[in-house]
Length: 158
Image (cartoon, rainbow, N blue to C red; front, side, top):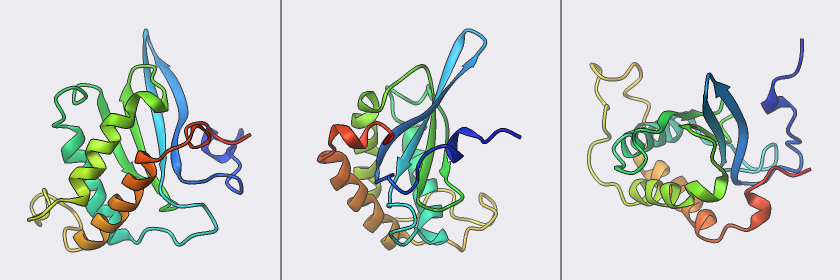
């Protein structure tokens, strides 16, 4: 079997950032998968499931309600390694184009107060495993990165 795209990235060199993981053609349309890397793989602690889950609920809610982008949002969810998230958007896009969207999303999470959307037994299969304070911590940390991002954190390292 061939290695999948995400296993061909050198995770030893990879640092937190926003990367185009892949662009797929679906008929005449394109889908861009973004790697929203929160931690340096195999160097920093990963996100625990409760904060990962809370970020997923909040970011998915924000992204699917953001007026300019909501029609392009196909998926937002955690990486299995728990070092970040994948965001799939309709269209052929680059990392720089989505920075305003991501800044808005993670500012929303960093300042969020109240009940997490979908945090009930009816709406979620694991609603008790959510940690808003830690989700806010990680969102603030990622937002600082986004506000100060350098070109090397927008393209996968060679």
